[in-house]
Length: 242
Image: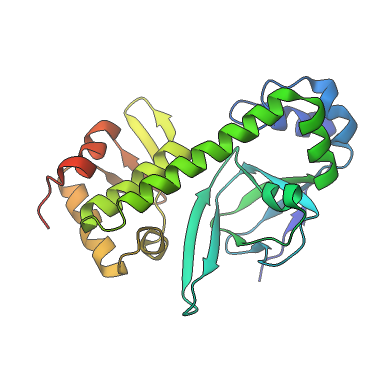
């Protein structure tokens, strides 16, 4: 079993990563972060490694530099439920830091992932002295709430709409624009099944339909969406036959 490794320290590189495009701290003054940079820990994690466990106490806040993680919990029957998929530039562990309560979910890597963490106290200090950081955190919370609301609205929709909604959800949160559309990770069907609330076999069948209609293209670890608007129309029209 692979273990996480602590990356060699390169303080300037770490600061540049935290301030780079798409990251939580993008655009913040460098001097605001210089005081905490010495407390940052960077680690490289293999796929399928548990980063956080439910009910752990929140001593740090985590920033994804590269890679993907899933946020999971379990229902009353003990079945795993995937709540979210986070990628480069995303933050996790911030709720436990602010509430000072145990963590409410598990976090597990889906791919080899590089993560920086800072002590919760340092994160809260940044929020207090940098208004832009507080605004960005509020925007992050609002975006996640909107995504959850939309997913709840389509929970009773047909299977095509539910799979399309998950793909749109991933594209809006973690999609990488290309000159021919948007790329998202080609997640295992079990993850899409958990996100959509559908059987794995149903997810496989729906993905084949979407691919036949040229609404998606799959290749190795990447799922390509040529036209996001066309995929969004599936939610309202359910134009593909079951």
